[in-house]
Length: 185
Ligand SMILES: Cc1cc2nc3c(=O)[nH]c(=O)nc-3n(C[C@H](O)[C@H](O)[C@H](O)COP(=O)(O)O)c2cc1C
Image (cartoon, rainbow, N blue to C red; front, side):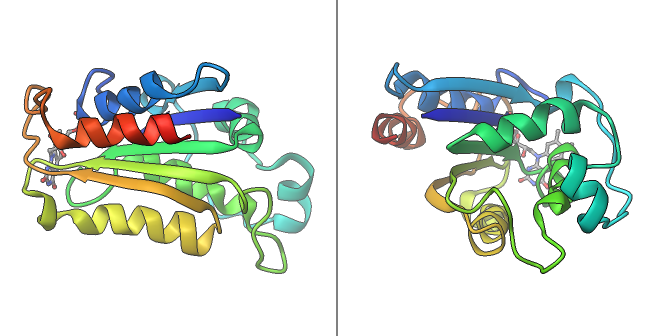
């Protein structure tokens, strides 16, 4: 099975990355794991060409950039996507949102979804504020991934009270949950 982790935080040792890496450390070694850190490189914003019938069908996107040449092929090949983001100003990070805008390429001219249905996903989010304040960010992610893009949810983890990278203590239950989720893939 191919597992693709898409990191939506600029912090590679941060809270969400630590939770994702705990999941990945626990997966069976027969699985193939790929990591994409969205803050490593630039990619275009979606400009809403909405050309599903021609550009999307032929080459996925009008922009010849990292997203089209490497991220899209990795998503298409993956069986499981792990998508993570800290809460920034009450939402997922801008970089992750920019990537989702470009997922417009997965919407067909008939308004069905191509390629993504049947894939599975895990959503990981973290906030400085207590968990219940920003759980809606996790719900936003799962709403789009499950209801709109028709992917199967394995789990959605949201942890609050993570004011900085030192806030996640080894005995935090979310790490045990992450380990069990990884073992279950
Ligand atoms: C630019 C910025 C905006 C943030 N906005 C919020 C916010 O709106 N609500 C909140 O609870 N925490 C906010 N935080 C705190 C982060 O969500 C929190 O520290 C999170 O655990 C960081 O995860 P990471 O280490 O994976 O990047 C913000 C942090 C930064 C740097």
